[in-house]
Amino acid sequence: MELPFAESWKIKMVEPIRKSTREDREQWLKEAHYNVFQLKAEQVYIDLVTDSGTGAMSNYQWSEMMLGDESYAGASSFYKMKEMINSITGFKYVLPTHQGRAAENVLFTYLVKEGDFIPGNSHFDTTKGHIEFRKAFAIDCTIDEAKDTQLEIPFKGNVDPVKLENCLAEHHNKIPFVIVTITNNTAGGQPVSMENLREVRKIAKKYNKPVLFDSARFAENAYFIKIREAGYADKSIKEICREMFSYADGMTMSAKKDALVNMGGFIATNIEDWYEHAKIFTIINEGYITYGGLSGRDMNALAVGLDENTEFESLETRIKQVEYLAKRLDEFGIPYQRPVGGHAIFVDAPKVLTHVPKEEFPAQTLTVELYLEAGIRGVEIGYLLADRDPVTKENRFGGLDLLRLAIPRRVYTNNHMDVIAVALKNVFDRRKSITRGVEIEWEAPIMRHFTVKLKRL
Ligand SMILES: *Cc1c(COP(=O)(O)O)cnc(C)c1O
Image (cartoon, protein in one colour):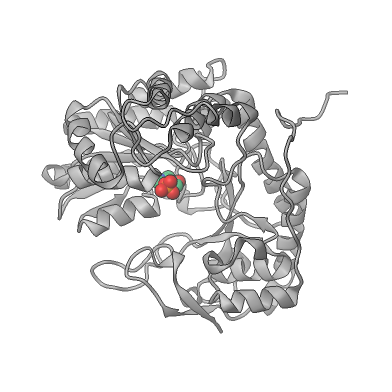
């Protein structure tokens, strides 16, 4: 008999978590204005709000924490991190930042001007925020297939080459760079194929435009290329990463995802001009260029995390757990973005809560119901997150409306996945009785989902 699959690690330290009663949760969520970001973490049993900075570090990472060089300038920890980034990505210039959005802020302060257009594949919310904050426009060129959650294709995160070329042809003198997000978080953690990265490179080159990768989950993207794309089965993850980055001029990175640390980020590039200008904004916003908001120990752990998570076994353990949860949801017939992506399940909320009108935010309503059911905290990636159109000020109902269940790396067991699946099934079973959603009582002008106050209808 073939041995079953199991994790490529064992557990050395545990952290207790606690259940609560439905009455407790009703009270807590009301106090939180039906916004799960406003809950206290201790009011949550299983926390799937994000896979960002919530992973468990390895014994090797923890041992490197003790070896951190906390020198203000020129710390050995910086060079350790820089060399690891050089070897995995091929980019020679590296600027640390405290997290991914800080890398965007630093680089975009130099590159993005009012009235610019930045084509890409479903820009992440902070990326879009940094673009729109500068009165520029994020142009989504994701393939149309990504919108059909039930369609199974291997690389649903891809850029549509025709949309990209149209955008470049129309606005080429107002486009500072093309951005590709790997994996495509907003479209459901969906990978981008090597072929697509190559094609984006070719089109961008035709218009003489640089390519930037938003790389938070680049290692998961490499795993999918190895598993799904012809010609890559025998290549190592590190070889695949090198090829992927060869089609870009630079990257912004949230190290809280695929670099397996609780805090950190960086910019890496081969364009000297970007580096020279970004240096100034790093110093103003983040810190001196050899630490950029990070402790020496953090940079050490980041270097080891990048190395560990560009190994096949590490990625296989992680992605198979996400697939396990997806299979449980299949048993219950719960619709989610298919095929399941790398870091999360994205439940197709309007297909579950068919009786809740879009104006009442079905995915947010499902988020609320799941928390009340079992103390599980997911997050809305939908109409609230989409913010209002900067020109018309109307809610943007054009995209997907999803409940994201993000799985932290190396944190929960498959028993937890079973609890999540059954809790969702219980909500699914009573979906017809859920006819009303939520209404906005107060919202911020940008990135409103973090602080929005809601009323349950
Ligand atoms: C998380 C993330 C960011 C922002 O990074 P932070 O570390 O949260 O600031 C940017 N892009 C993508 C695709 C992300 O997933």
